Image 1 (tube, rainbow, N blue to C red):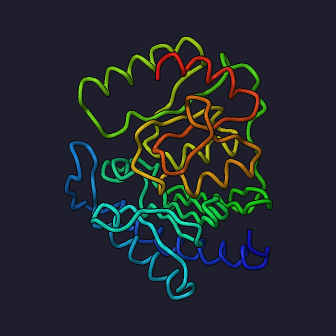
Image 2 (cartoon, rainbow, N blue to C red):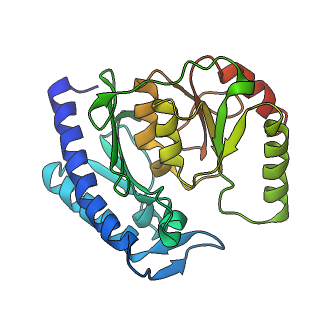
Image 3 (cartoon, rainbow, N blue to C red):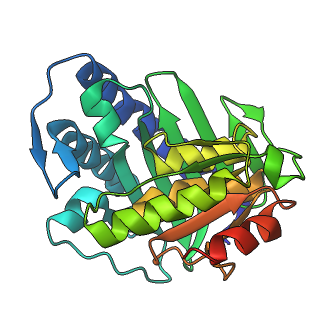
Length: 270
């Protein structure tokens, strides 16, 4: 996976980049936003672009041979194909709708894949000052303290997070609400926080017991959180129960005890 010194170095570089981008987000969060629409509901702000440029410039100077995949560059027609090369996968501002509304669930997500395996992850919420980090084989941390997933074993007592996604056609919305309908009878309660990356971190630190999302933007939503969940003792999988695929735009995560019960319920409504 690359020796542990270089992985620690990669993490430190990613944390630096996340803090710098976080400063831009924090400033922008309290100002009037200039917004335009990517899709019907998907919003882009000037802040997204400024943060992605800053992160990529920071990391490219340090690691010129590495590859880069970002939400904004991909949206603008850039290459998003994942290879075996060390690849930084970045969501400069996950939770753009929250950002626009001043709802404090926004974050920078930076993941590094090596041989397509998420290896280093940083997710930083600059508004409530929470920094989640993880390195493959080295544990997961929140503001420097070790974190682990919940020990909840009963789905009926679990807190579940999901997202509606950005598509608003009847078919997608009906499928989504039917799924939620059936799940509401099987879990304690449901949350939609508006950030896939922060949902994954919620699993990692035991705030949430299960989360899933279908049809999110791309690998940048999950590359950072994937490392953090696994290192906190959680499991990542496709909502159908199949193996997690970072390129599939489908993800579920939970502690190890709840996976099978959750898959049994959700599979009937996929």
